[in-house]
Length: 275
Image (cartoon, rainbow, N blue to C red; front, side, top):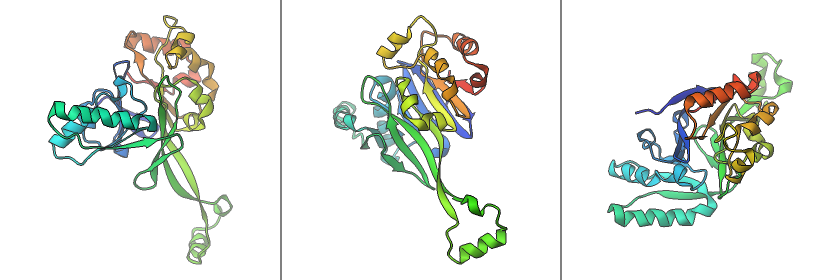
């Protein structure tokens, strides 16, 4: 079973996100998920889940996720989250066990901004700071590679091979950010976390899109308003931007209309709403 799927800036993404109800992002090629609000069937297969924060619409599906994996004899899942949440998370899972009559086997890891989790083939997940009304993180999905140093780019291939065999160092490390997920956050994260606006794919919440909720009220709830994105249109260097976490008060048509009317054309063509 698969979720609503998107191919954005070279990244395959399956996602559902409705503000206050549920958020879950699945990266099939990275074999991981970010947040589990209701644990859709298509993320049960993932044993690596990174949580941005502990609000119910982002974390409540974890007990189902762990229990279903246990029932199916799947490997124990690993969950990463803000370090402040690890103790309460463990207590929550232990409370579920006598209610469910089973052991919700899992491993919980606490993260602070700057921490990295190494994956396969030079890939990694790095925690960044988010600005919500509870402890919160965002995440970047990156890859480290070796590239030929600029001073050797014009060398013939046989000369490069000759120098490499002789032991000369011809490459330098480079870090590529495939995707960045800000989680639930104030727009301030864009100003303070450079990876967000430089990632090939930016996944950014946009909970409110019109004046039914003011920017001030939006900020008091720890969220992003479309007006704030419009004000920062020149910041976005991303190849693609996925906007998500829209309030359930808006219909898909209202969201598309607001984006069409409000976003500058050079930004609008890069934006995909996750509806």
